[in-house]
Image (cartoon, rainbow, N blue to C red):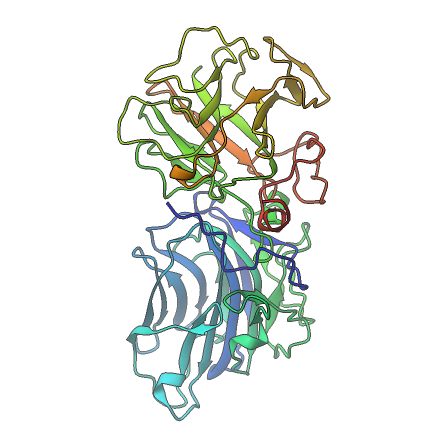
Length: 473
């Protein structure tokens, strides 16, 4: 199970990217622009990306007119470029299967170059990617990219929608730029590639810069060219603060064998399959600090389990989230806390809170500095005696004393949710603060100003992102 925080720095590096845009393939999200022809021999395309669903063909862009030029991920998660002018295909050896990390991609074209290998190059996180299939390009070849016509972002004309997050998308018309125009290696941590301010670049007539910072105009071009995109099926809720300079947790679709869940909305919403005794986990694990998250139980039977664990489900169908010494969950049916429960929930003798239902939002406050855990329902914290009765968090009330993370099992905890009843197929919508899959009516940040939650974040607790991890994790 990957616990990679991303190629972006987990410390403050000076230049911050404020927003990304989340695309959900199940919602047919895309942007569209009508363009005129620019320079088709020389151009640069740069963007940051964090994938959602993998294992299917997904188009990042298509430029469609007399011919078409497609930039996509194949069903094998290979980055590929196809140009119908001569049926040219280019792809590279790297596989894009990490849904927890941001990656920077620069596609650099210059068919006027005297060396064939330099006429189309791919850079990933500042490093030249090795080619797998590279079509021979004649000198001064006319790419179909930048030909004018319809420019789709997030799909091709016939579908195959992209799923995930995109930030800092830049197209340069007429100039071939290397990745140092868009990013740089950190001087203190030279393996970390981080973004730079691109606002001063020369974009060319058909160039554009999408920073996704205007929630009411998500396709706005801020290059100065006004090459704006029309928004389709995307709304302000799809604007995210999960970016290449502050990577937020999501739920991990790669750790999904027993749950057999179906994921959407940037891996923040999932419906669990019919398997019993299964759960899904956050992409980021923690071993110290104080952390807060919310999860909405959108639909369910009566047997959801929400909490924390130090592990994936073990290779058996008789374990619940709460079965082991390092599993702690609050049970929907009665509000009991389950820990070290074995193969099934114990008798109803915990008396921690009371039942919760579909539509309720469960808050989780995890204190790994003092090994304590707290739960709330719709902003009301448990009193530890059978009720949700306090709008004010009290560190001495409703305490679940947890076991320190075991060093033999990587010494960490992850947020988790699952179900005890087979066939119930509950739907969970997680909010780690970067993006929401459900509409919230208020808006509350942590003490560092990060996150957007429905209810107040307890003082001293933080949303689960890489900037907070660098300071408190």
